[in-house]
Length: 241
Image 1 (cartoon, rainbow, N blue to C red):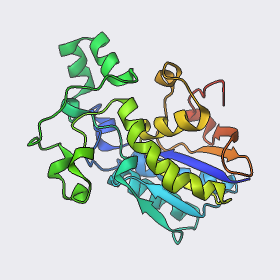
Image 2 (image 1 turned 90 degrees about the vertical axis):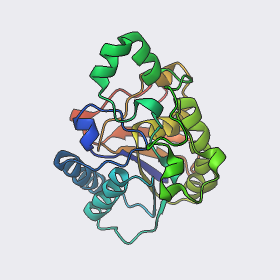
Image 3 (image 1 turned 45 degrees about the vertical axis):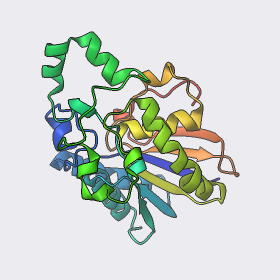
Image 4 (image 1 turned 30 degrees about the horizontal axis):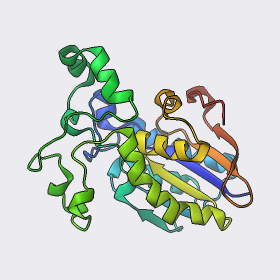
């Protein structure tokens, strides 16, 4: 049976500072590096041998992938990078301290921005430093596809085509695949994989640096089992899993 490992990047500098990050390209902390290395160790202990990797274009995920593959002694496998696996774009919240935003706007409003399925935060203008149109890594992306803010719903809408065109066919061909990405892009993937409804996905959290190892049917389509490899840092999985 093919296996799929989903890994949220290790702790980032802005995770540590309690700031909204999104598409801003911040680095891993020392703890984040340790988490990424541990992810590789845990996957190796589980006997996981990926044939192909997929990662976002943000360095916290890229470095997590590299440390993970080093732990698996599989740095040689092909790894594809795509902006479609980026974190959700937090719009005008990017860079702001979450506690300060809560104090200013109220907990109820911040919960809507952070946890609702289809309500995005306020957008940034096209000339804003955090608008992806001003980042050279997205120069080849059609401008109409570059977000100024995203909800989980619109994150899912950009992740799904990449899943269907690039990642899923590998699994259907019997390959093992590792994906290193972000909390919300991985929530989007789990929503697709396990057919989680719009309300239930709100409560799904993805811990940093803790591999979610999923076994699928021989056709690579239907999940058979799923487990976090670091049980001490696991979060609840939906009942359907």
